[in-house]
Length: 207
Image (cartoon, rainbow, N blue to C red; front, side, top):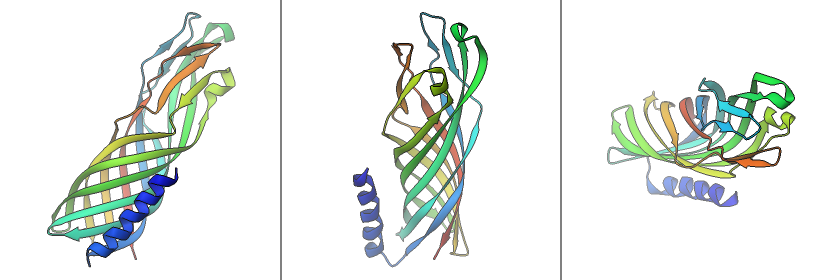
């Protein structure tokens, strides 16, 4: 966990030294997440299906922005929360079409780079994620889901700088690695390849 934090702090420091167009500030907003996973079906007729309904989460943290030769570099360090829902059928426990919720708290490290068009920006970049905490109602049924401690993805989006003081961004985030690696149900371990995608709206305020 320490290495990504050190990396993002070094990126901010190098950015500050690289250009007089450096700005630093706070960022916050909302993220709408969509989850997709292959249905889990066991020999005991237990079935778990991921719902594709959108869930809303929040994020907040610090950001920096460097402008150079009509380009920009924007590293961020954000604490984020997201959630998902699954439909469970377990005849042995008399559970029929019950909806169970899951929530995740994580650290995100997006590094956006792109082109400026006056106050407008368009960019793309990688994002690293460290999972801090997971809370799943599947635990109440005796199921044990395995989550990865770190994942990687990408972001692309557009932004608008307002009065040189605010930065409004709309981004899409996709995953390059799995959020979950499996689930154990009454001693049976099954693959549960959980992946997420997000639409992110955030507002930054520069000091």
